[in-house]
Length: 300
View 1 (cartoon, rainbow, N blue to C red):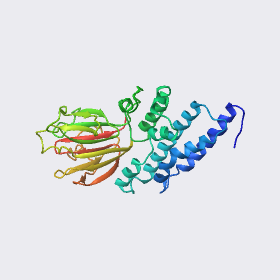
View 2: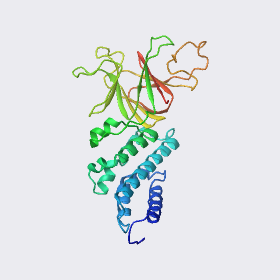
View 3: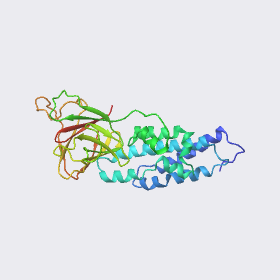
View 4: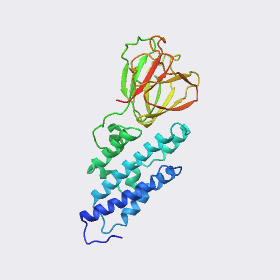
């Protein structure tokens, strides 16, 4: 135990190394990662409570921010190592156990009002989520904590193109992040016309068809969950309409038609069915083909 009459820079550096060492040990990418995630906030709180003299608030804020960054980096590493061989649904189950900023605040007995004087902590979590994990938005933090922070750059985009359009059609391009459902307009809600991305308390939606176009898209058709900006979980939750997925080689323009004749596209990636109830994890860039729309997912 380090004992000192007052907090000083040498003491801070020494304890910060101990915090990082403990956190890195908890975040080794193995089969027990998810279980250690759940105890990470309390473990961090206990370690810092042992520091004498008690560290300043700024030290605790930096320790939490560093832990969030290491946590999300370990998740990215886990996905990159296992996405091709792991159970797709298990990734969602594991991701649901990831501690959030709220959990660390609770572990230290802090209310969210602490963020009014430490906006950087919320911004740090959002930046890490955008860079390494499932994405997020500044609007979400305004709703959760009542604070305004800037929006980091988006790390993935989806272009929605009409199947019948010619190869030079531009399509509608929107930022894509977090998790959302792709579907057509609901009957009894004031959802906007397609193509539009709607954020809501019950979940986000990407609307690609009008409510009177059931042959083109089910109301709840495709579940999309970002595991990292490059690894995306897809599940066809429609009961009636099968989809197709297609990897996009880097040299293919995301606005080009991927189903053109062989003489126009001789090295055409293979189409793979995504039947009703089927799920898959794909790496960007790739396309999802609906009866009347193609969704192209890509990174900047």
